[in-house]
Image (cartoon, rainbow, N blue to C red; front, side, top):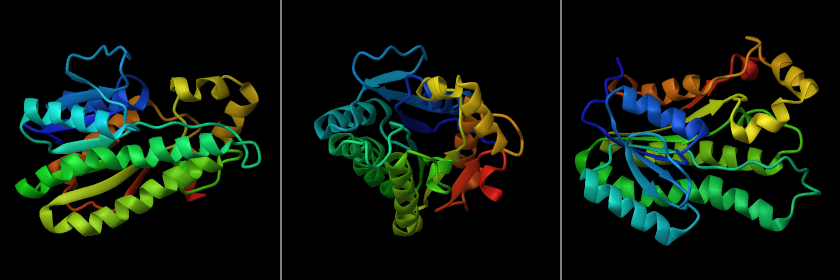
Length: 240
């Protein structure tokens, strides 16, 4: 099941957190994985490591060219790099709002500009966005994050239609809260953690491994008829 031997995968924002978990899960299933992250970010995975700032078009082009030269093609791309700030609409600056869209949305689009032509040529591809349950239900004081993750869901549906004829699937993973460095400070607050757990029928946070396993499924042959879908990994949050 979910055998990815011989497949070539790219994961952005992969040095830590969910991205690292996704990269590890794909590699465990046999994929050759390129780990992409900002210059200077340490990587502790034995894989092709590529410096890439997904907000910088030249950096993305150079990084993707390096991957294509090394791998020859790209079968799977997981657009995971992202950011989140807990700020109300009244409090957030225009600059920070724009950064959310530049990183979370534009930063997912730019690598695809290089990957999709290869996928079309080989009539095969798996595109996976890291979305969030915040794209499906509201979260307090996170309007920029909610907006950008909702944009990823919409982009996935549009791309799924555009590239279905080429054997390319496009899907999103929408996790609930995961104890990553990005969420750690909020989840260490007992009141906030209890609020989060009260919204999850399974009464636990998602793990990085839960998200990685979902990515391995969507990257696999077994998911060949799944496209334009938002796969929730949320313990039941969004079914209430």
